[in-house]
Length: 216
Image (cartoon, rainbow, N blue to C red):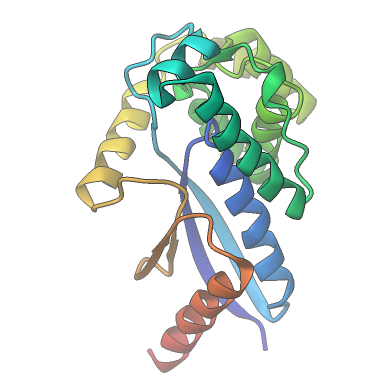
């Protein structure tokens, strides 16, 4: 028997812990082959006030953490965790901290073509491994074309304001629901867990969601 489960992932493609959380969710689902998951990606803006062209990453990190030594410790620890889930973080390649509003819009566009999961993975990889600026529309268009999306539809979408207000509205909705950090996972619109939890934690949440659905 295959049981359906809805998993809403609240995330930001500029968040390294969200990339780790995605990998851990994938591992949890691999241990639950009898589930038929539907994964939906819910926008969250970690840095809603960053200008459209982003800001220099070194400047941003020094403001946030106070010293290069602390930046090195924090991101060194994240890189070590990344290795445990086969992510080769290359933070040194990132030159700008991007606005991720348009990256979320790319995911929204890709979702209408059944490519949301692939778009999320491509954004994470391009930003954290390849060091590309996912705040640049030209980069986003390239990513979309790589996924097989129609450039004739994608380019005017990303160069317009289409669904821009929707991204901000969904970010605000997440905050109203008490979600102040990412990643967060919502199972069957009922059970919520925040943070890049280990696969065993996510497996327990999947089991709880499945059992409650069966009872209902």
